[in-house]
Amino acid sequence: MCGVIGYTGNMEAAPILLEGLKKLEYRGYDSAGIAVLDKNVISISKVSGRIAHLCEKTDDGKLLHGCIGIGHTRWATHGAPTDTNAHPHMSNDGRFAVVHNGIIENYLMLRDELKAKGYHFESQTDTEVIVHLIDMYDTGDFRKAVMKAASRLQGSYALGVICADDPDKLIAVREYSPLLIGVGIGENYFASDVTAIVPYTRNVIYLDDGQLAEITKENIVVYDCTGKKVPKEINHISWDVQDAEKGGYAHFMLKEIMEQPGAVKAAMTPRMKDGEICWEESGLDSFDVHSVSRIVITACGSAYYAGSAGRYVFEQLCRIPVQVELASELRYSNPIIDGQTLLIVLSQSGETADTIAAMRECMKRGAKSLAIVNVVGSTIAKIADHTVYTWAGPEIAVATTKGYTTQLTVLYLLALWMGRKLGTLDEESYHMLYESIRALPKVIQDALDMNPMIKKLAGKYHDAKALFFIGRNTDYATALEGALKMKEISYLHSEAYAAGELKHGTIALIDDHQPVIALCCNSLLQEKTISNIVEVKARGAEVLAVTCKGNQNILSVADDVLYIPKVEPIFSTVAEIIPLQLLAYYVAEENGCDIDKPKNLAKSVTVE
Ligand code: M6R
Image (cartoon, rainbow, N blue to C red; front, side, top):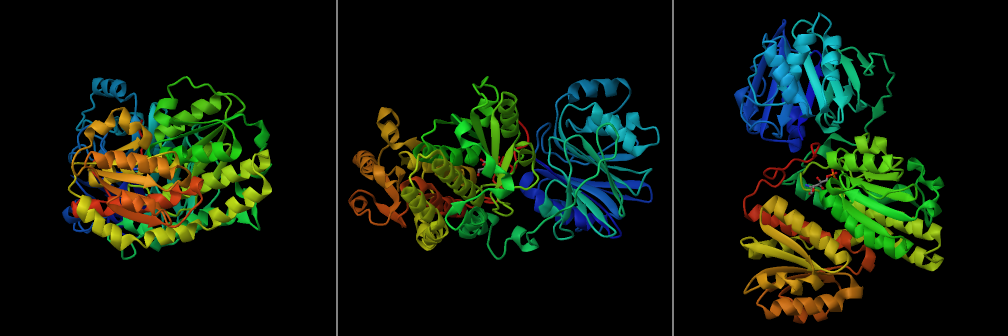
């Protein structure tokens, strides 16, 4: 939920740290700070508010000198987002400074212990115990002091530490929070995420849990938690700096919406070859699908809604029972899992704490895990039995768009592949569905072409008190994601309902001019949904329908209609979400919201 960065080299560190923090700001944006070390003195600047504020305060970093430093952008957990609670935190004697992403669960106990030893606490954060622990264990060996302190911590952490007495060294430690090392020439970095360092290097080392890296400008040494050196592989990042820039768009979200035809193509291309679906890179090709008696899909937020849409596809094509569970619920539900359960885990970031915990719980009980993840080298990707990457490229906006549609694409391919292997699909249907999936990038592009019309409709709906999203089956899954998009970026109260369920209570909320967004793309259920539209119209609702070309009946019942191209009903979610993403975007724009960084949210939810 926070972003950390560190630099050591021959350049002034502060401007590099600030630029990196701007890239990490999507991870948390309520306060920020940097610490720079020069001539055995650590200087700190930290502020509540955005990185822009920190840039102003430090004159874009020109006021702090030194070629080694650490930085942090915060999403507050312990203590309000104030200047004092912002990171870095310093030891009482000013010799150590620490940045931290994660949560220290035993901080209260450690705080009491440290207070009893005379340490003075400035902040309300859990992080401050770390810097005092390091100080307490310091006997002149910086690395050993950090290692000893880390061994006392329970919870999750990606730590960056500098020491005034050891001025050439950064120490980075990882436990259940993302952290990687950027390998440069005559300079090295650490960061929560590769976007922060990709302007300088594309060579990275992913730290594993329990590992500590000692980083100087010329050298990187990684240790395990027992202090033994561990050899690490250097990975090359293939995407470009521009991929993490806005590229002329007003917001990352709009850029990412528009990138979806390419992203979905990138997700399918390596897997679709001459009519076959192959999973070379994830080792799934040899997976025995006949050993699966049940599928459990788990995830959070939009990824959970992608799973909800995926459920219909798996059940339809594979005739296997599928259960979709919120990870935050599954982890504490004493789940019924056995060796014949295939656990499908969805996560854009691969770092969502609840998803990781649910996954570990199910794997402990014998489930085979298959992760669908975007961020390469992330925790979920590492711990899964099989990982399929979505190849969506970096997603910066807090509201996911291309992350979601690429998850759907991979789910469609998996279900189709599995259905064929299981024999629940005949060859003719397989090839017909294969071609439908191949056509999806074009279908998405056509849906995006409605952009000007949707922008106009946003003007009509932006000041509604509430919005209702309704649909059946796959349309219902889209309604859930459409409502989440709307509420998270425009703050407009939005609810999704299974269309047939309205009359069991919710229809009481429908009165004159209440906007209802009706999803009606699943051609098998169009007439049923039209009946529900008629019901809300009879109570005065204003209906915006999203449907497939050719559905003329809808024109006589809806006030406004958005037509997406005709698409195979079970794969319609990936296309019908496009107008809803754009609608949410333009409603938020009309309402002057901070679209890429909505209030109270963070991109990667690494706390429970
Ligand atoms: O990185 P993940 O896919 O695991 O994230 C899960 C949710 O936190 C995420 O989808 C969240 O709901 C987004 N803000 C939705 O736009």
